[in-house]
Structures are given as C-alpha cells and as structure tokens.
Image (spheres, helix red, strand yellow):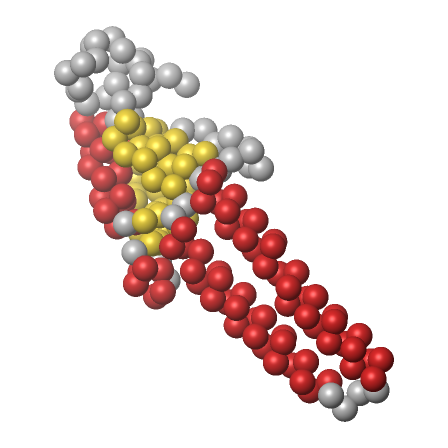
Length: 172
C-alpha cells in the first residue's frame, strides 16, 4: 500500500497510463497509401475512353483516392487523442472517448489472463495489443499500445498483488 494513503482510503492509486500510440497508425497509413497509388495508377488505363469519359473517370478516381485520407486521419487522430488505458492498484480503466459508451472498470482481483501481441509491422514499431480476461467472462482489448508486452507484464504483476491483498470495501 502507498505510504501516503490512509488505510481506509478507497481511491485508486495510479500504476501506469497508456494510450493509442501514433506508431500504431503506420500500418493503416501504409495500406491507404498503397490503395491510393493503385487507384491513381489505374487512371492511366482509362486513356482509351473518349475525352469526357476520360476527364470524368480521372476526376472520380482522384476524388475516391483523395476522400480516403481525411476520414482515415480523423479516425486515427481521434484514437490517439482520446483512447486512454489507466492501470491502478485495483482496476484497469479504459476510456475510448465520447464516441463510445463508458466501460466499467476491469477489477484486477478478477483477472484470469493477460496476453499481448501485435502484427509483424506493429512489433517492429514497438506497438501492439493487450487482451485482458476476467472471471465474469469479460474480455477487454487494448489496441495501439506502445510496449504492449511490458504493459501486459505490469498488469499481471498488479493483478497478482491485488489478489493477494484484497482492497477493503471495493466500490461497485
């Protein structure tokens, strides 16, 4: 127990914070760049069409390739700004921003398993996912986590401590 906390204090003490790391956007951006390049390269195959169809087809292909980017950047920016994963001494608190319903705390005393991983590019960039399972059958996925393996290990350690020293009067 923290030396600065009163024994009857029910507040959650922070152990770590993570969020959606911008490096996790690289695979999405790479796929979008390849898709845009393919769409724009396909424009030259329209050269045999009449003049109007050629211009209209070129504009349609260009507009399609261009329209992908604002939406993708908006989604990735939203994740990077709003996704927070807060590890406390007794719970994991997940906040995915105003577009998602609030998630109830994942109580560490109820954790049955913690796993981590990532795609081949994500692992090279140092980002991945963490999967948490509880006794109630709940599964919590944390995506875009920088140092996912280390964060999963920290969750395991904190959960083990929470199980050996149950908190007095757990809220909820």
